[in-house]
Image 1 (cartoon, rainbow, N blue to C red):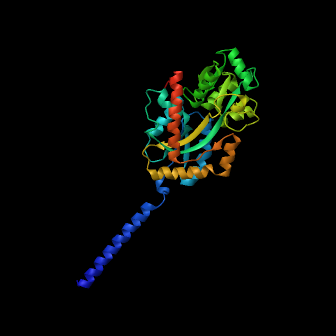
Image 2: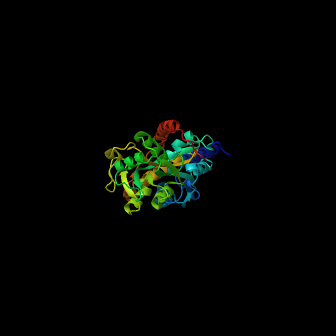
Image 3: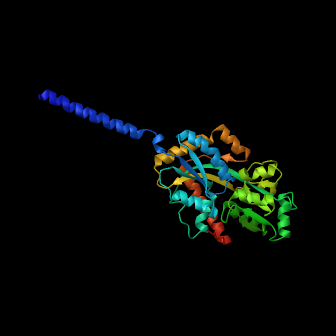
Length: 331
């Protein structure tokens, strides 16, 4: 072999190696795409069907499926104020194929309520995106002799312990809200836990319980159908003619259901980022925005970091209320 031939072969090998490395680098630099999702994705809703989280998951699921090119299945896994489903996601493979959609207020209250939690909401779950804020609707069964929030407060004070307030489970955000409101108003009512917001609403519709403070997405249809008497809503806007808590002189006007999407901790950042991007696009879809708005909700896309900051703040704030009220969860 001549020296010229050897030099040429060496150059060719070096060139081929360089091109190969460049190709690999280019492949690694590609945006997270189909390789992130290689099988069906599961959205775990830790409450019974029909509640706000379930409604949202079934709205988002088909859009997410189209975006990632894989089937998206909604799985209801109710129990223990959302902890059963949250635990399942915390222990799933860290690859972004198992998601958790829920009222994240329940995650914020869990560490203060349950001394025997089988997962850590902060360490074992990775925030993907906040999804929606839904104001609470305060409503009563038609047998309760009130038509306004002021009449409800007066009736509750005149009949201490008589009214039963349904909630989505011990320690659920609407349970903590009902406890806080009662304390500030100086009234007494019984807090009755159910397996999710939908079950709580149905309990009041049937007359099993008397009062509901629950997310508008799950509760407003019952008010619209005259199955519940709507009295007031949280937030800044009137809905279906009901005054805001602030207008009615009620505390807790900033309360509501904050729905968020999370996945298993240690999921690759590129996968979390891809999910965050796709959820952001879905929430800006006019069809999705309109359907959520119909139920009184407002889309709230955001970054994982913003979601993490919200969760920490809520955990600190509601933890103080839980401790002061002496509320204990029961798994």
